[in-house]
Image (cartoon, rainbow, N blue to C red; front, side, top):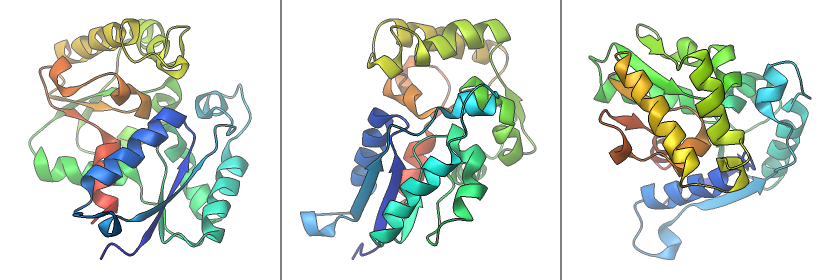
Length: 229
């Protein structure tokens, strides 16, 4: 039972990687230790910043992502995943260099929404500026209206909550980051969003279902359930 080996190309960020591992544990149908999957994690926090690369102000992370995947490949993983939505912009390039399949979190979110929320027409997305620029959500969530925060809210609330001096990347998961994300969420809801997607893995370290009054989808939770089937 549960004999496949799962690999996590991690470190983006370290806490989001640990959070995905916990989600995989919780999603596994297990009654004893031996019922769980073998999970191999390379938490490579040295991978260049994905948002900076997409915005053209930083080094490409592809080589480092492939190198990290190769480490997992040598250890015999059967399927892999990446706990970073922004990194999915590079997923085809990464996949082309690896022998094991990488489960695409955005593909799984598309399936999940089609199954559980088939009538939703407007989806609010909280994500990094890099992810927004790529159009990743428009690519996968077709036939829906994707709503993003205003430019000011994106910079002063979402990105500040993630990258600010008191942000999530600095280890803060309460206080200012939560307040900023709740305000950004309410803006999307006021614009007509019927559900929200936490389109950056760090966001769910802070923002919970009970903080908003519409469904809040965690792509990593969806991914964890899919990879443990």
